Image (cartoon, rainbow, N blue to C red; front, side, top):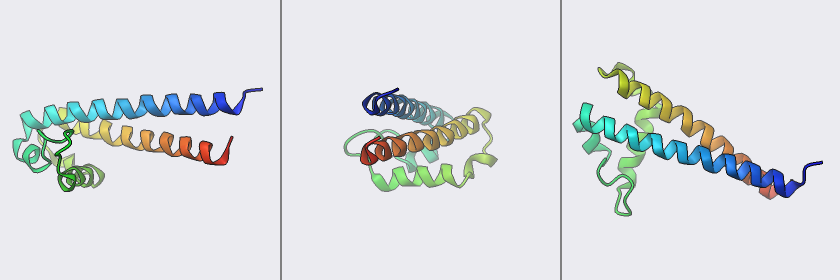
Length: 108
């Protein structure tokens, strides 16, 4: 039988790996965005996105841009692919983090 501590540790490791994949893909999206759509890059504060002085409203703007699929009509295929990947990884990472907190609070 698997102990509950081992199960919580395994869920935490999977959640941490998925969050790091999401952040890494988001960084590459910002690099691609800087090259193919400089105006959008400035609108989402691409240079200061991961800094402590980053503007949260501009980060939320990128979240809504990706959530509403406004990138579908973009001219660059790489940008569209990166946006799709960021969207999918965000959902996966969110589910794993939520599962981790549920496992902790339910005491599995």
